[in-house]
Length: 335
Image 1 (cartoon, rainbow, N blue to C red):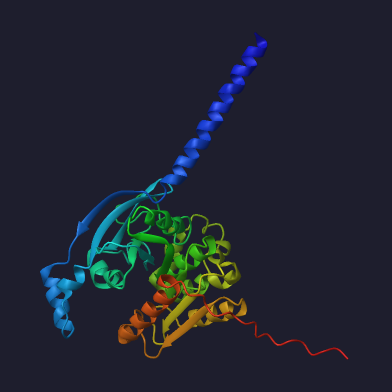
Image 2: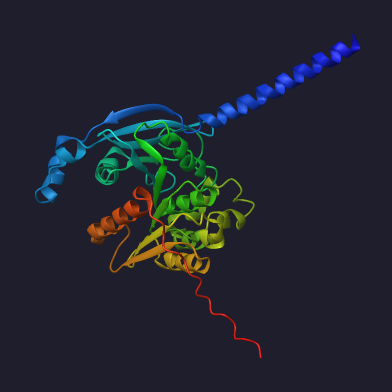
């Protein structure tokens, strides 16, 4: 009887262990699951406004090439809000993950931004997805400004597998300012990104925070970063590419773009990123735009050409980046 009791207890323990493992794997498998989606369309008023801005434009035809959706998806058990834009013509398309700028309520995505800025990537032939990050636009959780919320970006990768026309073997990423920080972190934790673009980048959060102290950046970090009250160094280093440039995925070429008249993010941020990427032999290109402000509106056409060329070469066409050569001078020979 004692032996039978031991066997029953062992069986119960095995069953309990199996159930825990099954639950854990089920939870992991749910990351990226699309819970809700709602399609929306460009208004006639917006289409007319855009047509008036450009000669021989027909934005009604342009918007007809891709559908736009607001979505809710699962990330670490949180319901997170975002957007997706999908080409309507049947086929398999490369993908682009867009990482937005902003913190707190600043920089939230909206339908107008999706129509005016993100739809063009779908017109170029990409399935586009973007996150609001946790805790925003009615989503669950709390934005940690580059903490666990980075998973909201990474979980867009499995989300893409739920989109029939998405070719998940070809994924690009594009981030602006805070979104560049999210892009660098994603490149640190994933090798699934074929090529990336970073605009007006934050590479050193210490410098960026000091530059924006009068705008309440220290208070923002105190609210957003759980451990910042006790540790003012480690959390910022964790979010600053210049301290771990050698850790980002070496197979992900990076396009750095910055305006030399950017008053929001000092161009020296990109200079320092350039220095670290070059030092660690990372595949990259750096473009500086004379007179360019934050957003590079003065160079919109040139910026679009550069991004389109970069994405087509290294994401759509899967070209190999030219070999990066170590140019460090050898020490003089010993006599």
